[in-house]
Image (cartoon, rainbow, N blue to C red; front, top):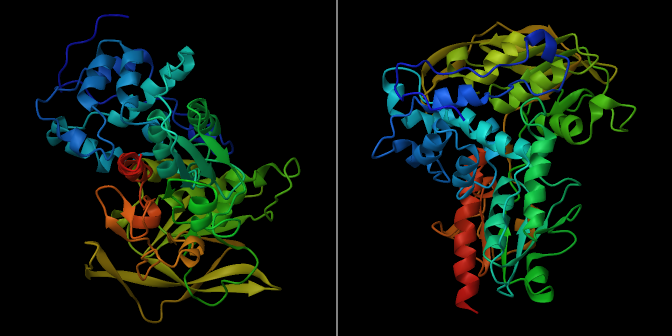
Length: 472
């Protein structure tokens, strides 16, 4: 490797190369191409190596950020990968989808007078370098403890807990309701943001650690929590089922053909390859004018996915506030604009209009912004008499999601809040009200980020380990 450049914050933040909008808007190939080694070393050299790094405090899994950044600046890329993996089991994933601008990078000191260090892009570079180098992780399993742990859900929280528990010598079995492990990573995030082979690589790492994954296995239907613990002999259970029950608007016309929740739409495309019909037998109707309702990252994912469908001619996002209030990541908004997604601000749907059972338009009402509400954003207020019809033959509703009630209905001794989230009796270790049962991720907090779910998985793994070993 070449000698590292001198560190300093006068070097501008390095922008990773991307596919051009024209090249990418009809393909599911990854948009960002990532740093080259030279770019990564130059960006890493901007780090001031703070004695009290606030960036680490902003990371839910507490990656030793200054240490891995220093190793990148020195060209020690594989050492940097090992440093990250000590606390983050999925760096190739979090480096792509974690909202670093609201977490670690938000606390970066050099961001006070310029652009913060590109921690996420450096994390991705390191993980990709490790994979592409062919370096095999030296997995030295701990001596077996003869303890069995069941994990319900193969999303970020479940996968993280599984890796940590397997490394401690426990027998770990993941029960996943869908036919592919990965949870929201696989069905919710499009391939142009998170390639499937990256997820499959991380899941293969878990299997090499001895983790067993049982697919198409719905806990709450096939087996109950009590059956897992009493009949099958599991010493503890971690519930990590996420929040996959979609919210709807509650307006006329939502039962028309051509209306989808974002969950259904993204699952059918991402997990079931609907866009590759007839090679895969899960088609979507050949929609041409798609309206996406919402302003978060899921709405952006749905809109950019819709744009890539062969039949799509026009894709629009309808959002009831202004662009300044949109909660989606700025990078995703920029990518959507570049690709041709239209944004319609200060409008809200009040009905979905149909013809012969199919969507033909969205009836919208214009809005204006009032005083800030509890979220800190200015409250959208309807303008009387401003309704109009916006032509569309499909509507995707991306307004967030809630919890699936299957497990809660099955286990009456779990304490559940009014919104269906599992309440914890000890949040420090993710313990629920039911002895031996732990929970974490969106099923506890509501819909949040991948990295926060992983943080809950790590806490739960520590709590579960202490719990089962006390009874050893």
